[in-house]
View 1 (cartoon, rainbow, N blue to C red):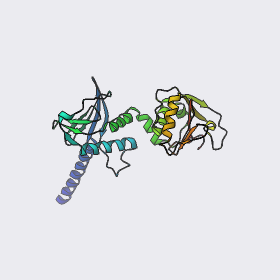
View 2 (cartoon, rainbow, N blue to C red):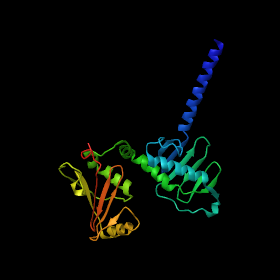
View 3 (cartoon, rainbow, N blue to C red):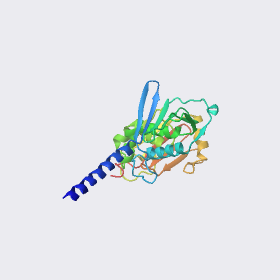
View 4 (cartoon, one colour):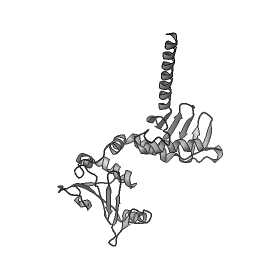
Length: 262
C-alpha cells in the first residue's frame, strides 16, 4: 500500500512538472510596440520549433517568430561608435525572453540593444517585427484566411478584408486606394474571365503606377504582358486570385467562392 502511494505521488509530481514546464514554455517571450505613452502587447507566447508547423495556425506569424529568433541568436555585438542613429516611425519594439531575462530594444533596421548586457548587436529584424504587428493588427483577417476554405459574398463585400487579402497575396499595396465592387448575377458554370465572377473589383491607377507594374513584370515569372499592353496573372493561392492591369485600371477577383464551389 505504501509503495502504491509513493508511485501515485511520483506520477502527480511528474504531471505537475510537465504542467509548469508547459506554462513556462507558453510564456517564453513578450513582444511589445511602444510609441510615446502607448504600449501594445503584440505577442505573448513561445517560439515555435522549425519542424513543428502545426504549432501556430498563422504561418506568417510562425515564420516571422522563427526568423526573428534565429537572427537574434546569431547576431554579433558592435561598437557603439559605429551605431547608426536613424530611427523608424513605428516606435520602439521590445522583445523579452522570459527564461533568460534578455531584453532587446529595436528602433531601426541596423541594430538591437540588449539591456541586460548593455550591448548593441548588429541585427535586422524589422521586417519580422512588422509582420508580427500585422498579425496582431489584422488577426481577424488572418483567422478568416486560415480557417475558411472558400470566400462567401459577405467576405467579398468586406472592402478592408479584400484589400488586405489582395496585398497579402500579391505584395501590391492598395490600402489607401478607392475600390469599386462589381456584383453580377451568377449563371452557374466555371468563370473563365474575371468579369464573369459573381463579384470582382476595379481600381483606378495612374500611368506612373502602370509603368511601375510593367517594370515589375520583367521580374515576375507568373506575370504575363500582352501585345495590347495588358498585364495579367493568375495565382494558385488559397482563394485563386486573378488580376488584369491596364494602363488606367487594375481589375481583380477571386475564383474560390462558395457560390462557385459549394
